[in-house]
Image (cartoon, rainbow, N blue to C red; front, side, top):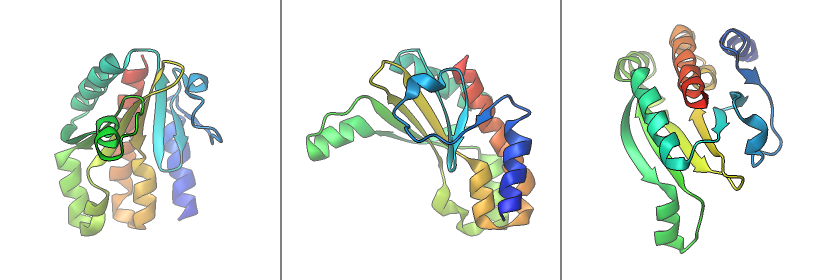
Length: 168
């Protein structure tokens, strides 16, 4: 299992110019501008575009890679309504690539507990906006299902391309 994770990290991140890096302080978004980093179960980048523009860019990049948006949660508004807590803008998009979802579901029906693939867009204190997406490679590794390896590689490549497009 660990070997598959290492293989995926090497094969998936190095060719696409992404940097695999453990981060101890995720609040330091300024240090990851124009980089794609991984933190185990997700991949992320930070950009200097405003929140609304970043959301538009994420939607466009997801569409370009064959993802649709199934759900949308305005986390900030929900926390304000439910708990009267103010938070910087934070939006959670539930993205799905139907052909991939169907193929994975055929081999691993319980994968539905991890669907759709969440994309988090959140404003940082320094004005940058962080974009994070679930790491498909880690999800494949967690299933232990070798039949999903190729799909995991392709989905991870698509997620990296989404983040690269947003980071430009």
